[in-house]
Amino acid sequence: MIPTLEPPPASYSFPARQTLTFTVDWRVFTAALATFQIEQQGTVQKITATADTVGGVTMLFPVIDRFQSGFDTKTGCSTGFSKQTQEGRRKISSDLSFNYKDGKQTLVERNLVKGTSKQLTASIPACVTDSMSAIFYVGSQPLTVGQNFRFPLADSMRTVTVTMKVEAKEEIKTPAGTFQTIRVQPTADEGIVKNRGKIWIWYTDDARHMPVQVRASLFWGTITAKLQSYETK
Image 1 (tube, helix red, strand yellow):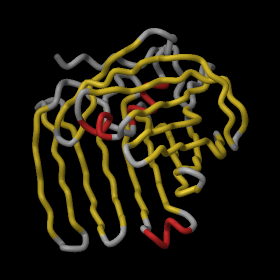
Image 2 (cartoon, one colour; image 1 turned 180 degrees about the horizontal axis):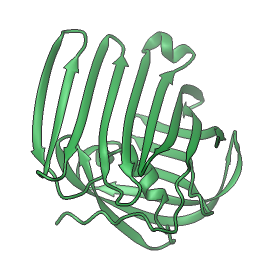
Image 3 (tube, helix red, strand yellow; image 1 turned 90 degrees about the vertical axis):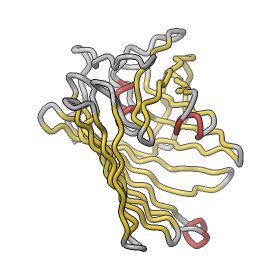
Image 4 (tube, helix red, strand yellow; image 1 turned 120 degrees about the vertical axis):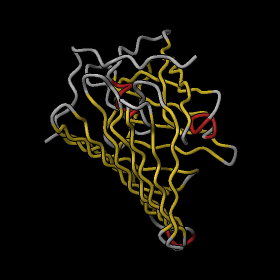
């Protein structure tokens, strides 16, 4: 049974404007830079992210990804998710929109190399989050060690249940500084969370619950994203 998305607590304050920059390391190499720009527009928290390969990885397999999403700060419901990916010679643009009134989600995907497009429609519950908004939605939750919580995630035209396991408190050292954090592990029986292997997210152990580290343990290796810098202005 798909759980209900609990609204963010009224006591939680989302940042009016924030920029988070991460270095993405694979083994001993820094493979990419990822940046999240967060901005409040009315009651909607808008998120724009970029991920670009750096160094020798760019020569082997250049990746330039752009993502946009947003969610209602009162309800937590996603307002949509779009991405533009350029990976090697592949260029894809996709836009996912949610019509909660009609209980429908619509995906429009365009192949910018071949000039083709397709549209898919599927049902959704009354409120879902998306794979990028979920990172910041989770930060609004209490995050009490030993307590898990579940929410619905729109994923590849399906709605999957994600369980967030609040595992432990841990000190984390990043290029942006040393942080006291809470380690959380998202799990799911299907979809993008399961397919990414094991994932952990470290949030600051304070009122902000700012993400400062993400680690994905995949079948071909482990990727770690560490906070390089952050600013709020």
